[in-house]
Image 1 (cartoon, rainbow, N blue to C red):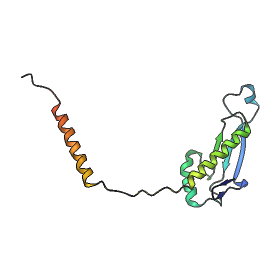
Image 2: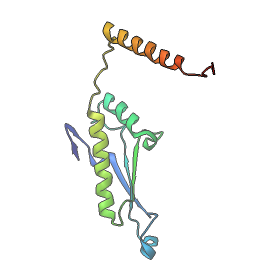
Image 3: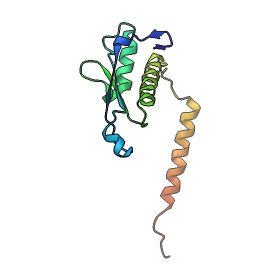
Image 4: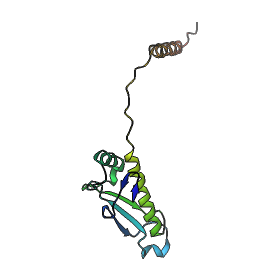
Length: 137
């Protein structure tokens, strides 16, 4: 499977088919249509370390203790379609991890914007100060 400049080998992915929950009638009890795709990301020689770190952050709970990424799909009643969806989701995650985030450059507010903000706060404070109980006199 090729994702941008990265080629993922077949040995890095294992697929296991399990019974899905949800709609399907009596057929759901005898067919294993859900797919559990396991990608050995930590051991992958094709992923650079920064990409692995970003992938780990993006994966969240789907990242296991031994460094594998587990994607579980039971969207459709067809095993083949669930398999395609799982591979697409893996490709999307890796593609997102390939994007290097832009570094944020710290900026300072301009002198004029600081003055305008403080003036607006003062005006608002005066409006609120004028509220309150009115003397009956």
